[in-house]
Amino acid sequence: MPTIKSHLVTKRKRAIKVIAINFALVALIVVMMELFVTLCFAFPSVCRYIPVLKVLRVLYLRGVRNVIQFIPECTKYDKDLFYTLKPGSFEFSNLEFKTNYYVNQLGTRDDENSLISPDVVVIGDSFAMGWGVQQDETFAQVIERKSNLKVLNAAVSSYGTIREMGMLARVDTSALRYLVIQYGDNDFNENKAFLGNGEAFFTYGDKMFRHSLKLYSQRKKRYYFGKYIYTMFNGLVGKRSYDEVTKFKEGCAIKIEEAEAFVNILMKSQVNLQDVKIIVIELNSYGNNDSDFIGNLKRIIKSGNYPEYIKNIRMIDSSKILNKKHYFILDDHINREGHKVVAEEILKIMQNYKPSSQDSNHSW
Image (cartoon, rainbow, N blue to C red; front, side, top):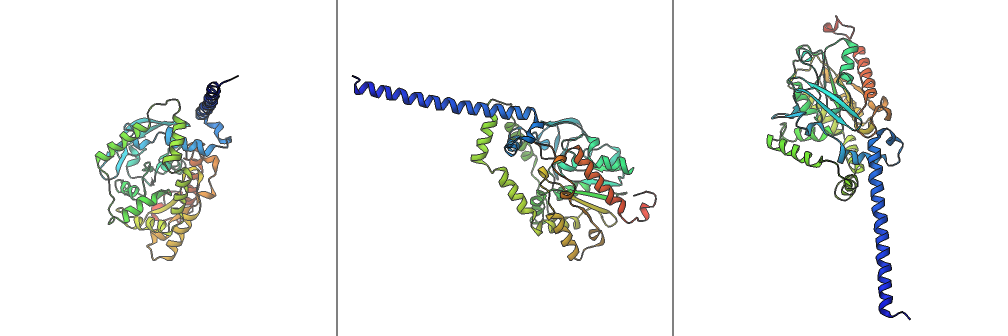
């Protein structure tokens, strides 16, 4: 007859066995999840058909993606603009692309010849810079080939409108006829800060730049097994989810102040834009494009007493021309086909502008 002591021992063994089995199951699930994500990242093309694509994108953005402005080989400190691209050549890659950059002395992704009296200047952030596509595939270069005009791509990753205009002030604009401005829904924060800071762009010093590079390099340490699962749970517990970030950006996009800030910055340009034809297009992450900013911009300009060059701004609603096929799957930028579509829309507007005396020698 079993004693009370032996009964307790048996019960304890059973409990330990149950705990061990549960622990093993949890460990197996974690291992399978890590392997699943690893395989998805190894073959990004299949991710489009996976129900948890949004989760994979969060993991990609937080734990895998290279960010060009935080790579010492790609950027250099600038006391006025915080950073520019580093002159010379380098490679920039992520899971879905491997691209070559050839950077001029200005610190933008274009050749030296384009710095001399360009007819067209493109300013913007990573979308216009050509994140994810080869240099000759950017919409700036497509426009140049098809129009026979000299086009300078002066866009730099993560720039807001105020820094974009600061870069424009460094460009030879003696022959400038068209200014293409690519806007992003995250430009508002930088623009608003400028207008609320006595119209002075607050630039961080070289120490902050080096600190940013250091923090990024620590986050981008080599892969270790379990990194993706750790990143996932760390994001759920300690950081805002992608949905929250999206919601925040969408909230900014519907504010009329966003369009007002944009126009105010154009009005304060160091470059004389009186005779320049301005084309504006908004491009946002993962195809989250809508008509809010462009619609507000039209209303602001229509209702205000602005100079002719502001009244004559032409706008492109990207939500009507771009869809998911024009974007990468994991990365949030437009792909080569997206750049082609954007270039075609800009070319249409350039063709439809009323010719002026300086256009008399061109078909544009």
